[in-house]
Image (cartoon, rainbow, N blue to C red; front, side, top):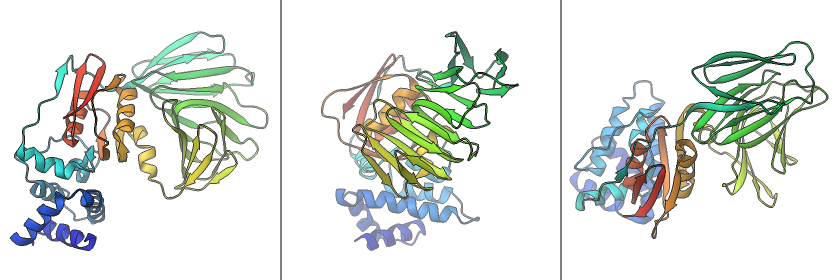
Length: 375
């Protein structure tokens, strides 16, 4: 059956389907057991075509809309890659959901005080003496802490050590919910902090290691130094680094700490990772290494994207909760959905929820609270 589905989708995109084959494809799209494969196959074919330099990305958008044949076009967003515009937050059951939308009129999302804007560059820098400095993307500041000059500009904080600063002088950079920030450490290593995160670090590195402490999520590009390894302490876990690019997701409301390696090598609780692998550390400190993970999904937030790869509704809503600084409440028997696709993090919350609503749930927005209910 999977070979037949692949053939039908290829024929449809090429405009060669007979009416009998179109009726067959339509029937298959309604079959629950094939929905996941259909979504994966459409994505695979689109990725393969995108590699063609003469590929017109609008072909697949139009093809998908012809397949689902909805009365009203899919609401356009500003996707990073246009070939996935149809799949921006598409659930794996979305194909059938679009068909069902022809047969019944779904109630519109209830909006009360709906203007909830996305997060932005903002953070709090806490100095070693306990004083706090508010940071944003608009200001340009230079201030000193001992022998260290600290520059703040365009959503980035940078340290410049002049002489020897005491190793015991620590700063903490904290992003609130709805905030993000970039940091260049005294050794030149770069850190991107996601919303609701913090990094504690010395104002100058000395001794035989470069130790920082993370809560929340951060992406690191570490300067190599075999004489002074870079280490990240996350709860009871330790990530040892020489020089590499990696992402650590360690929010308290997630089930595990996930370290994803893009370049180089790291060691997580004694387990060595290679590029494309992800270490999952559970609450009881059990470590599992996953191979061939989608590293683009792990760092999508740094690039201004929500990217979902068969992510559960709860995982999606936790991301939205942190980025838009909202509370999420579930009411009733909310279906167990999985989402696949991308969309930009610069969208207003109501735009995001309007897209997600096509998958079979309904949202009410009241102030800074999202109420999720079944349709």
